[in-house]
Each structure stands twice: as structure tokens, then as C-alpha cells.
Image: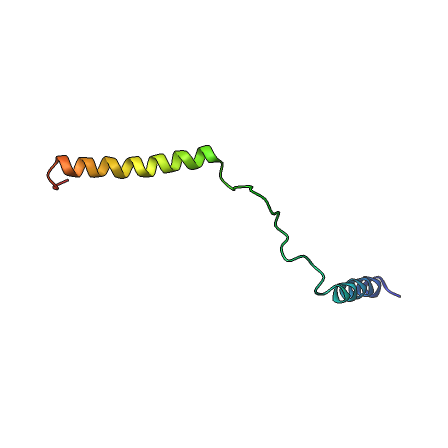
Length: 68
């Protein structure tokens, strides 16, 4: 048997093993838990900047008479 034929046979065997396992995988591979992609401090800072800048814009518009 040649080397390429042996490699092909290994791939075929792997493929056939996967066929027999079809449908037996878990629903999700993601970890279930309360793991946020962003930390609470960074999230708080983001909210502070967004709300603060919008309040600053409202105050600036109100004090200039709407011509800002």
C-alpha cells in the first residue's frame, strides 16, 4: 500500500466514525454561565460616557437657545 493510500484510508475511517456519532453532540459547545465578554467596570464607564455626553449636549443646547 502506498503512503497516500494509507492516509486516504485513515481519513475514510475517521469520516465513518463521525457518521456513526451523528446527532450525539451537545446542543451548544459554548460554556453556560455568567461570563460576560466585557467587565462590569468597563460597562459602567461606557454607560457613564454615553449618558454623560448626552446630558452635556442637552444642557449645552438648552443654554444656547437651541442654536448650538
